Length: 420
Picture 1 (cartoon, rainbow, N blue to C red):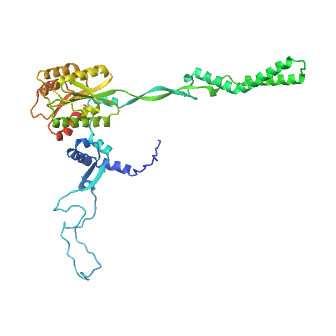
Picture 2 (cartoon, rainbow, N blue to C red):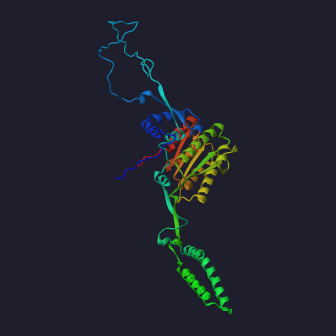
Picture 3 (cartoon, one colour):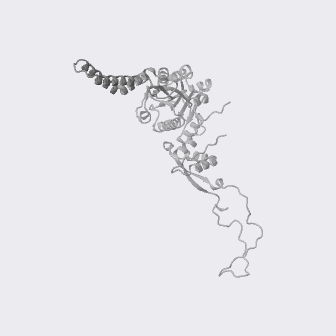
């Protein structure tokens, strides 16, 4: 059996191991503290850390020991108030000065520590996931495909690049044999001059011919191809997502959505955006704003643009379906939609929205979440959507009245479903 020894240094975070052990040990208390913190902070600050307090009674461990009861005899050295033979009365039970709270005053939180931004978000989004676990889990699995990455001097014979190897061999032969051929040409020219003159010297001619023969032998010994010349095609694994996911964010910015309702809708989508960016590495987000007309916008315009107008919700649904048809084929993408509106829509448009959902969108999407904001009584759009929910199990709808309801509704919509 192999044994692995981790000798990595902790760096400046020397207590990282103990910290993780502490977080695991008091996980339930920290989750409860984070939930309390979420209820009392601005949701735009959700991605920041938090000071967490845990009651002392939850930190202390049960131990066995000798209590202070019973009869005891002790001998004290004495002082100016007490002399030898004095008997000291036993102090009343429960009046001692301990580090914890007294019995009459009750307990209090006396252990406070900070959790980092990453730790806070881990606890914040724990047990949340996009519905349809099978496909979303596949989306987080990374496949690798081999891609060309130049050439290497080693490899298997099947990956030999013949042309590149021959080019290398030719270059090597040219570099090594170049001086020899240059000298051979000089000797041949000298022999030719010597043969054309009357003062032919046999000794000189013999020497030149011997040197020429030696150069020809040295040139012949240069190998045509050497193992040094071989080049192999190199392939490296490149990550490739097995499946892909896209989230459509539809926000109503019509005139009936006053500043308070728009603020709640933005907070909901900020929370959704944090959740997606935190839990999923590869997921695209499409932002759509609509009043009487719908348009696809970038992240900045989605949260900060101030354009408003009347209300035609069907325009956003039609644009969503058009984008799905053009860019996100259902065979390749897991498609999710989150819509926020006050539900105030033209009476003749709400039935059209239900028809668009039933006929076009619901067959394409994995999950459709609708939140109606600030409505004391169900609006006409809510009633039409309720009929969609009755017919499709992957359609969910919730109502948000105040900002304090956002986190609870969000957890309700995206809580991790247990496998049946």
